[in-house]
Image (tube, rainbow, N blue to C red; front, side, top):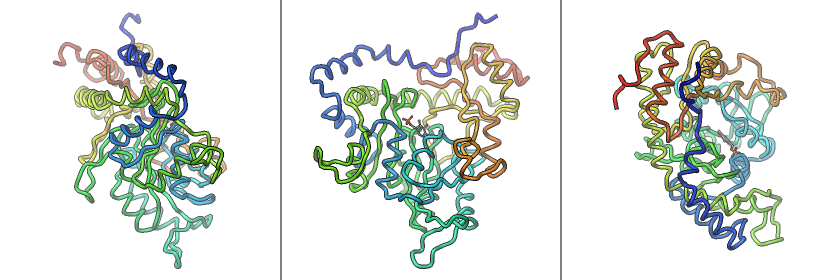
Length: 407
Ligand SMILES: *Cc1c(COP(=O)(O)O)cnc(C)c1O
């Protein structure tokens, strides 16, 4: 009895069909010059994306993971340094820390925002670190490493509490590098500056991913670093191009980490639509919240503090009995995801870091309850109603008719 229309978790086909003729023009223009790597299309996108993020600089890169790695190196994280981040993120956050030579130290997240818990960050500093008398810098208590950086992750499109994070970082001379890979256009009201600030504009540097499914996605792999620091910008520019500022004169050892022209052209084109797409996502999130309001005990909806304007890369709810709920939605042809099923400190890849189950209880509990519902700009009210109705059914609450939900 699967006659009901499919609700995909994410529809990447429709937006590309809508933009097809413009996208083809970008490809034609690239073929016309054969300027596939670097060049004016990349520079144009970098200017536009820096403008979008309210930053002085944007440096296009091969992907978000490389962007974060190079941002950390350029911000002067040194091999052997301890770098603080959270365990409930995509593995790329921690891969980048390791690739930059850092050693990840996990701090648990806030029960409501799912982003780093600033109280636990302070507690980490107080109980797991000592302050070096000479430099005033933090040293980890157990493995005696200088703690030089914090990587807050703006998970699901909502920014972490940056004022509190930056205050603590300033106090101990730590660098803040934002993982903004899910947060293109997200905003944070900074009580320090008295204004709304864009994701990617607050830390020393930030990394963005343009993986196809992100709020701004390429037709392939792409990423960027944003920063207001000219030294960091210059260093990332060199790092992404084998450490050279002039061809074959390598001042340092770098990477093949460039953004190609075709992707840059596509990103410039799509960037114009991102503010509208983000508004659609926000309004879909609002609608989901309304649909779930009557069943708040059974479905935990996302929490958006007054200082946050989230862009809902993902709309994540908490449910008991998650596997059964996901399976029953799948039977109704409703796509869902889990971001992420295993916190990083418990992944095999990081067994060597020595964490154990129970060390980061909020992240561990979340991993068993979170469920990402369908979320994409082109989603219809009818599709949202189908998702809600099936969740209602599953959790035993009242089933509403789509027609009864107005608009
Ligand atoms: C997507 C993502 C990345 C990595 O980006 P890629 O472009 O896939 O390399 C890093 N961190 C987070 C939180 C992400 O969601």
